[in-house]
Image 1 (cartoon, rainbow, N blue to C red):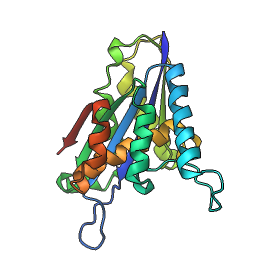
Image 2 (image 1 turned 90 degrees about the vertical axis):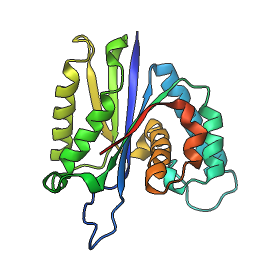
Image 3 (image 1 turned 90 degrees about the horizontal axis):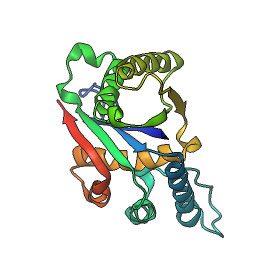
Length: 218
């Protein structure tokens, strides 16, 4: 028996005004899955090692870097990060939305779009095969309180029929600097997003062995 840890992060934005603004063309949601408390601690430890050795080395006088972020970490540090965690069993599940194909009416309800894509990713995680004592979903906090309540209600309803009735589901919305698991998810999510938004797969090709499911929607 074990605890499953799921870390959900996103890359891109949910802006749809392609005329007067410059939103991203795509929006990616990725979930990092770890299937035990011991492995979760190992991952957190390695994220802290990367922060200490590469982003906050001894003698560095500039401002302390509190978290790993895919969009402002060099490719060399990204590769170092993967070398540190490559032997940890984990799975990455992701879906990328082609925003230009979203119906105009639906584009006005960004929270609904976010929840739908998150659920589409969760659909591919094999909960039915798990022996988890508990499932803990940690989401990068980017929503208002009503949006958080709506997300929790929607996801709970979707997962009810897939989880063992005896398996509790806990959901948390944390800032990324509060969770090393979210920081790792951010690194991977950014790499998948770059494949679509920039046609750049350099970082993705480094960690692609960890991807269990990855697809485009619309």
